Picture 1 (cartoon, helix red, strand yellow):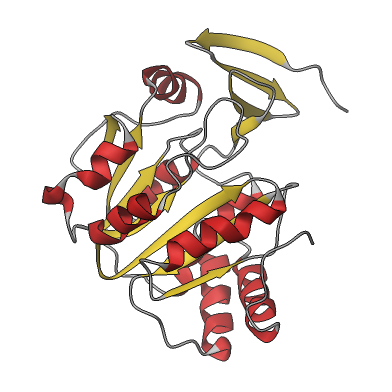
Picture 2 (cartoon, rainbow, N blue to C red; picture 1 turned 60 degrees about the horizontal axis):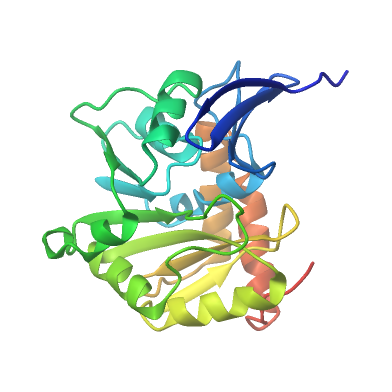
Length: 258
């Protein structure tokens, strides 16, 4: 049975709603910019956010994961909880969002492994001291209207690549009208040896994966790895491999509506 969403709180222009056991984050508009199932706070609820973890197919030895754009903290919490050997940094420009995540989405306080920074993502990646310091970069940057990725320029993606280690990987949520997806991907390709993407979900979300160094891809091995990920993390990793296989078998066709 569907229940009427209840407004919990407002900080800045952001607010939280609840319905059917799921708490959602809204940044000044009805658009859902993060979600958490209340009885499973360290799981990832939304499909496209789960897809942001597809780098697990290629790396399991990470030491530093960085999230640009905190959202409802699903990715940061997941990495903090499930990857005990990794440091997790989240960068969020809106102090109100950080406070909402701490009060309503179970985001832990900063400690030796978790560091939530109140700062501009551009300033973070532009800092030369962070060069080659990040193994995994997860990018999900949007304004209150969530119409197009923020900071999506060739210069920004070049700085993202510079932050990554030699075998570093970036995943990015490209939420926009489908003709724009290709423009963003082409900019990413200027700074990364290989870029792939999964089929569109959620009426406009395409999640892309960008490799600092192009990987050797064996789909049989990827399916074995996907089954391990599903058993360990309860993530639908076989669907990611299906999507990558579809992308490759179609000749890396331009992203478009599914």
